[in-house]
Image 1 (spheres, rainbow, N blue to C red):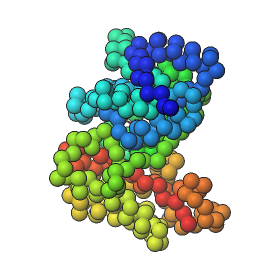
Image 2: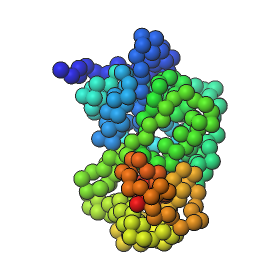
Image 3: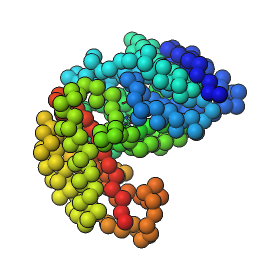
Image 4: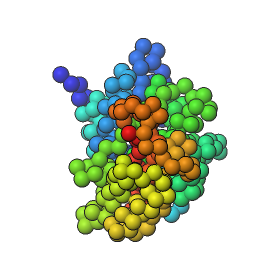
Amino acid sequence: MSDTSSPLVIGPPKDATRWVKGRIAAGRSVALVPTMGALHEGHLALVRRARDQADDVVVSIFVNPTQFGPSEDFQKYPRTFDDDLRGLRAERVAMVFSPTAGQMYSGRFSTTVSPPAVALPLEGECRPGHFQGVCTVVMKLFQIVPAQVAVFGQKDYQQARVIADMVADLNVDIAIDVLPTVRDHDGLALSSRNRYLPSNVRDTALGLSRALDHAAELYKTGQTDSSKLEEAMRSVLVRSGVDSIDYAAVVDPVSLTPLVEPLPLTAANGLHAADSDRSPVAVCLIAASVAGTRLIDNRLLFPG
Ligand code: AMP
């Protein structure tokens, strides 16, 4: 029988740390899933993965003000705490860390984390200061919740790369696990921001996943020029009717820098392995606005 009691909800960081350290002292392993709430199936997939990896799952729910630009949607970002808690109860989450902004950032707060190089292009160019806010809050979360593993989504591909590099560079003792993007039946990547989308622009929003699929198909049939793949993605986005395109890029999957050589069509070892056993040769990333909502999506390209 499953235990569906409500997770413990803790606001003050010190109380959360005490609770986590108590679990670890009792011999239990802990996994952390950082979120901004307005939870959907994508978040819940991360929670299930976390539960596979550790005895106790902690989910943080915090809409972090420092990662939003002045003209971004911090004020109107969806906040659905009661629904979130109900969803997490069904997933047998042990603790929800849900601090206020004041509990996270005291009046004298001034220390920040300078993000790694992989934070510079793409989102880094479009959203100045965003990754400094993300790195700082995630570093704080890792101190407050000293878990053995933290689970992130590939949906925010650059964010996952930034955090992996930050953790490696700063010798943070936590494993970073990244899970594939969960999509709706029609291919739209699930996102808390999808609830801003009126139903009549759904098809336009699907332009992002269509553009990524198109690039993957072109690569599969022999197109190895990353700039041609980028052009093809842009045409699909324009035809779909997006308001504007921040970027449609095909770049190195680790550094996110431009690819100068043609993409290899076969794996280095020439074997036909499953995607999960192969290294991607590139990642396609898109950020575009649809009816005033900025959407992002991405897709890895695998050889063979
Ligand atoms: P957010 O609440 O949007 O900050 O996201 C919290 C975590 O959930 C991040 O690691 C995201 O990458 C991940 N996430 C968001 N949407 C999805 C999705 N559709 N599939 C998988 N993970 C997701």
